[in-house]
Image 1 (cartoon, rainbow, N blue to C red):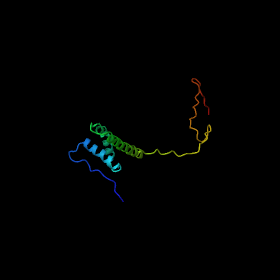
Image 2: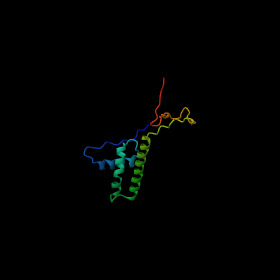
Image 3: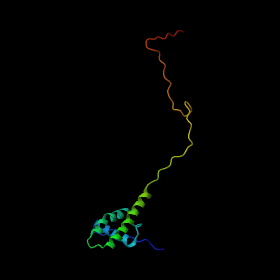
Image 4: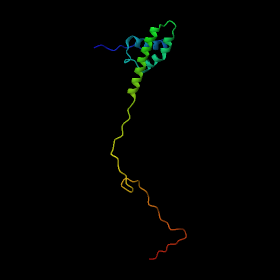
Length: 125
């Protein structure tokens, strides 16, 4: 059983651009993104325009670098999709038929009947 290739962590004094170019070269050489962190992949994507902008880069190298960048972006997209938590579906209940004044109707207080103002009520015992 073969092991997946790994990249050495950034060396002391190595710039971020230098490490990003090394990560991009690692993907170009091995085609492996599984052992790289999300930050490494994002850094490789960030330095891609710098890598292809060099005047001595051949068209064939640009095509290969572009293919490596495509792998980097695909790995990032795949990881983002896997990190998303799917929504919990609501339980499906059969529809309840609501009848006016039925068991499930909203409770409403009975209106208070007050006599009109000026009317006196005589109570005799």
